[in-house]
Image (cartoon, rainbow, N blue to C red; front, side, top):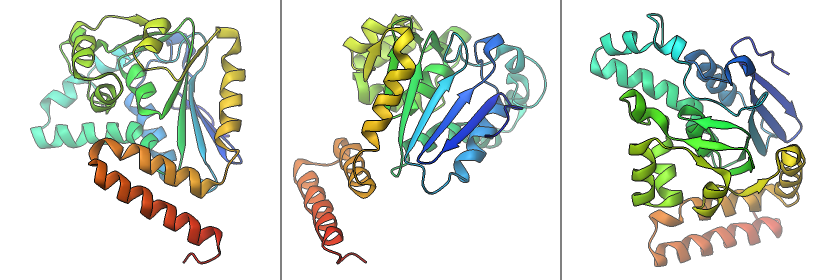
Length: 255
């Protein structure tokens, strides 16, 4: 287990890694130091990890960006970013995005366990995961517009992919909050459970994700993740090629 000096605790138990935001006193508000810690962990992810669970300690998943940090004058603050040359500012934001985009990687399945607030950066962190289990007290919002900002932590495409352009636009430009019932109805939730059952639901889903051969799961994720960008003929070809690899591997003929 890695201590949470930067507001993040990481626990690896065999094929499951758990990333816990552990600043419950501020509803797990996020800072650049937290993003760097998560990014650094992702670069050294143990090879046997198949499932990554992302969660928040206490009564919220994450209330978003820590405005006390962002509004100050130090590293990662709005003031510092605004004074950088445009290319340098964009490069810095790219570093922040790395803490989110690694959850898309093809060799793991990521699961967000969401209770309470998932606001702004918290919502984008949940969106970065492949699957989302919401407690019935979850409240989600893309709130960046209320600060005069845009969602920039890899959340925009994921949101459009999940709910469509019109709904994504409405959520992003109003910044309104939605409850777990609505999130489930529009396709953001994999599962909604009572708050007291969230941990059990995560364990059950994780067990299901680990129940079958890793190589088959990796191929299936790749097929589904790339489907939207392929034509029907291209998807059929991708299926044929993936199945050929699986058949050869099962017959002991793989490379």
